[in-house]
Length: 126
Image (cartoon, rainbow, N blue to C red; front, side):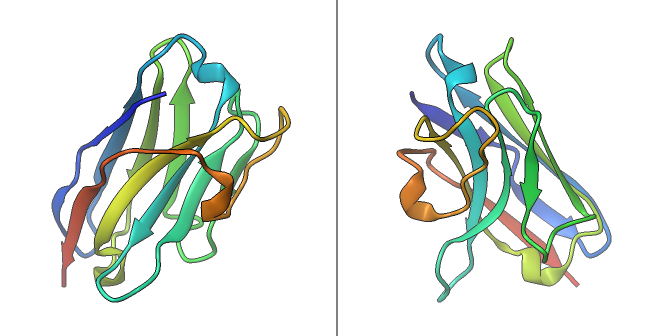
């Protein structure tokens, strides 16, 4: 599967941004999907994930209650709605996919994902 992330840009603290990830292929519902981010000088970290059909969602504690992940298997897309942005949300955001999971599983580790998008920059000013 090939992934194409979009929607990054500039935002103000307290504001909102929406990221989208479009996937190629006809088996999108076979993949759990995740969003990761990498800030300058830091390791890439898990942000949010959804199981194959969207029945299970999981968030990193740092974004829980502010970010919402959703997927549309008919359109082969996964979206990350980011609200109440903070300067520490500044990072390159990546969408990722994995088929190495059960139906309800939401992997959170980098090594659990096989496919990665190219990344989109999100910058939040204070």
